[in-house]
Length: 342
Image (tube, rainbow, N blue to C red):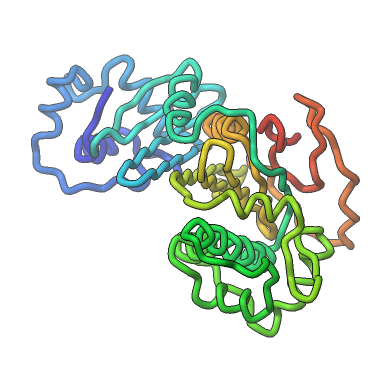
C-alpha cells in the first residue's frame, strides 16, 4: 500500500485518538480535494471507510506506543524507514520518492539485506574499541582521532609526518574549528554538541588516559587499538541514524538513539546515546546490521528511576546471554553479536 502525504493527512481524521508518536503526528499537508477519490481508486477507501488491510495497517501506525526511525545517507542516496508497534504487531513505512510505502513485515530480512548493500555483512573489523564516555570525553577523543586521520591521509599524498604526538593546543584547535568531514564536525553539526572549554581539555585527557583510550609520552597519543582504528577510518561513506521512541505509562515520550558511521567494509563506528553517556564502539558490518534489526523491532526503552540515594558502583563486566561475549558495564548492546543487553 502506497500513500501520498496529502492522503495521509486526509486519513488522519479517521484516527482522532492517535498517539503522539503515530504516523499522523507529524504529517500535515494542505489538502486539494482529490484525496478521497484517489484513495478510492487505490481500493483503500470505500464509502468513507477504510478497507481491510489498509485499516489494519493504519490502526497500528495510528495507535503505536513504540516507533523507530531509520535514516541512511550515502552520497546522494537517502533511505528513510519507520516501524510502528502495537503489542506484538509491527508496521513498516518506507519513504518511496516522497510517498510512503506500507507493509506488515514477517521479518526484516529484506531491509537488512538492503542496508548491507551499503555497509557489507563482514564479521571482520580492523580494530577493537568499546568505551563509555561523557559528551566532553567523546568529543576530545574524536578530536584526537580526527587529527590521526588527517595525518594518515597526508602521508598518502606523499607528505612526511613526524610522529603522532599531539599537544593540548592541537586538540583544542580541532574542537574549536573542526576540519571538514571530521567526526567532531559531524557530531557538532548533526547533534548540536558543544565542545568543552579550552581550560577543561587537560582534565578530560586525564580521564581518557584512565579509561585507556590515550597515553602521555612527551605529548598525547592514542593507545594501540584507537590508533589502529583512527589510521584506517579515513573516508566516511555511509551514515546511519536511528531513533527509538516509546510512550511510557504516563504517555510521556522517551527517546533512545544510535548513530553508525561506515568508512569501509571493516571500519564501522557506532554511537549509542544514553542520558549521560555515549557508548562508542568499533563494530563489524554484521554487528551493525544486528543492532539495526534490534532497533527496528521497537524495543522497550528502560526508564531510569529517580535517584534518591547514593548511586551504587557499576557492576563488574557482564556477559552476553546470546553469544557469551564480555560487555562493559552500562552498555546497551553486545559488541560481538549486537543483541540488546538485558
